[in-house]
Figure 1 (cartoon, rainbow, N blue to C red):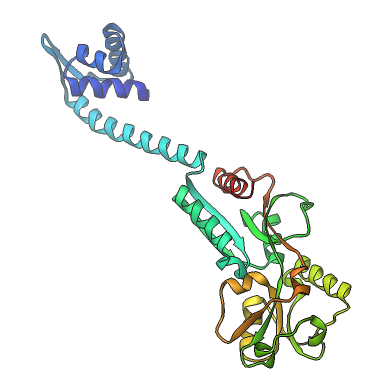
Figure 2 (cartoon, rainbow, N blue to C red):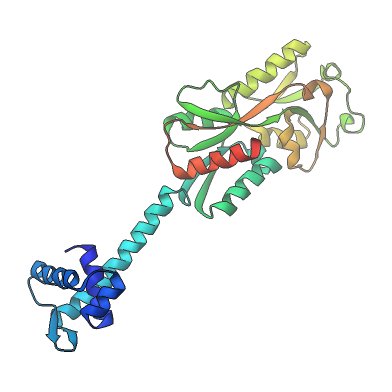
Length: 296
């Protein structure tokens, strides 16, 4: 029993005659008659009661008709679903992104544009720092990440530059620095700093420290936070000042003043979108295509 034969069978039932069905399915009448005979041979019983004015369904034919309609509908649904998955217009995409960048306008617009273009794809967004993102990408438990990297040389990963970030100074609103901002980092040499752990984002951490070494600046660190949101909450509580990605200011927090310094502006923090080079997910490659459209 073939789907093609079931389609012919349904056409015969619904038109009431072989001749009318042959016109509907675009097959010669003798060929259609032969296919119905083969179908009856295959199921082992007569499906039609034939008479001079056409054909009428027998008991077995009525039972087969109901099953055939359901089978053909299911086949159409399966084909549509597979086609949708194959073209990346449905499915699931796991995205890692630092919490800092969830509110960055360019990143938010990228996610919104993707959702508008491919509404059938479900985003699973994981707020992760660059270090854990890199680990999960290499493990294969994350489809794509938006993170800090030093360059495109990461074994097993493909990547595209997404944006350039820099650093900014975050101080408590109650701090004297909020009303009289420093003009250079050297003025902050005796100030208490809240800092992050290197393990959370080694590339970001090392790039920042190298920049400070070139400037001859060494922050006096008295507190540590697990991520930038934690660090900023500690700043808001008055535990110290912090140097964070400028993207942090895209989502202002109560109790914090962000201060731009020329020395921090010159610390380039490139953001990349990265994925496993052997990941052939159409939904993923549609996202990469959208990135390439945006950044040229």
